[in-house]
Image (cartoon, rainbow over all chains, first blue to last red; front, side, top):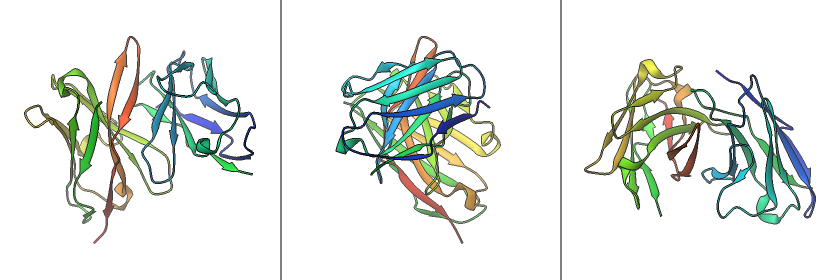
Length: 107
Length: 120
């Protein structure tokens, strides 16, 4: 199985901050990398596919980049509704696997 | 707009069978793959398996020996059966539409989930 490792596991940030989350794959996955947002008590919400393509309706302050083994999710200006846990997921090889999550908290 | 709703017993005894159903509305069940994903309390996400209306299935090898997915197009339902459950199977279980495009795929949207506890 391809292992996905996110860093940091959690971070504290203020409204308006630029936030970057990193996801590393245990082998090259090209750009087969997705990002999801999960708020407490809710199902995950799909944000980004193919490493950098924004799902329709997702605010443009979210962006993704990377290829091969290293990927990033960036929130350019953190808003109140962005406090949540973020997961990366590889769609290169089955079984599809997720990172352990990064919790974004209010400073 | 597609909506998914999971249902099933909230409590299952160890060694018994866990059975869940996902009702799909707002889209044809024939058009996509459909996946189950679970999340133990306070932990991360694990993909369980997927099914296509053609009958094609893809299971996580870690669960394959205990898992069966099936699909009822007449009821627009996807179902999961997991045999010989243990406490390690306690989790929120989600169904999700599994979208495939060219050489990639993703899960969107997800149902609200159903919490299953394995305990005697």
